[in-house]
Figure 1: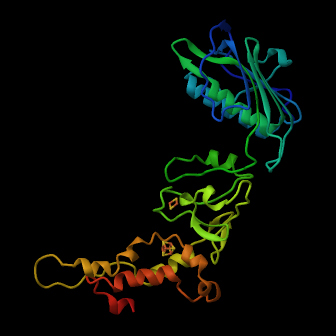
Figure 2: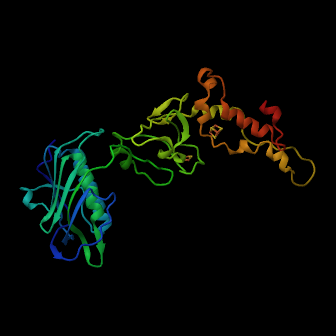
Figure 3: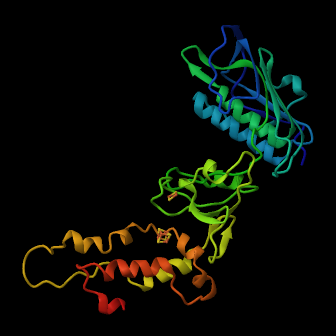
Length: 334
Ligand code: SF4
Ligand code: FES
């Protein structure tokens, strides 16, 4: 379906432009080329967007809808972000988004864009719809809302991603991730687990340059011994890959449960606390530091060749309790 003729009509508009000194722009990443003007555009109602070119597909249309919804959230102006109406030509639109073709979510794709904002309107041009999506994010970053009003500064930006990388960080443990966010990023993303980013949860173990490591504790400079060195990242071994770098830990945690890794305390008949001396504690102290990352499981040649072997982490967990003087469940565990 072509959307070249489609326009998004919303209750935002560009009623005025005024001269003023350039404001400080908080753009991240900083665009490759940026020219700032002295004018700005006030936005208040009936803002219109039209999408043109061969890249005016459903993905870009949804991207424009998202941008408008977020503009609405940030500006507190009410508008119907789902209304599409046909306009009779680009001259009626406040913002024109032009994309040459849809573009592929692949390394090396042209994701550049040119964004021109002036008193006359907003012009976003890109070779692909993907580049246009990047430009839409920049528009959102440019929006200013203060006591002078809601507005976009006049700029000319030529930009493209610096790094040939495709990915999405789904950090659902710390941030709410709506299903819509996940769905629109499903294609071309890299899937891996992470959580604490401090080396304590054990969820991001992976094989980096052939060695099992926690990604959050690994600096590129420590694994890339020279400039432009190739760094390889692979999933853990001996566990089935669910997707990309994400493995299925079922075997690992089944083995962990088998050893009953919990304290079965000494049965006491008398009152009072159970005493453990420092030297008794030191016997299993190191074993308490296991964070269940499964790196040892991945690097263990016995695990690889014997599917019945419970693996080093489970053995360690068994030892942690067997050597605990407060533990009275040895007969159950052995
Ligand atoms: S013992 Fe194994 S699972 Fe536990 S922290 Fe060390 S490498 Fe990770
Ligand atoms: S993210 Fe938790 S150990 Fe790396």
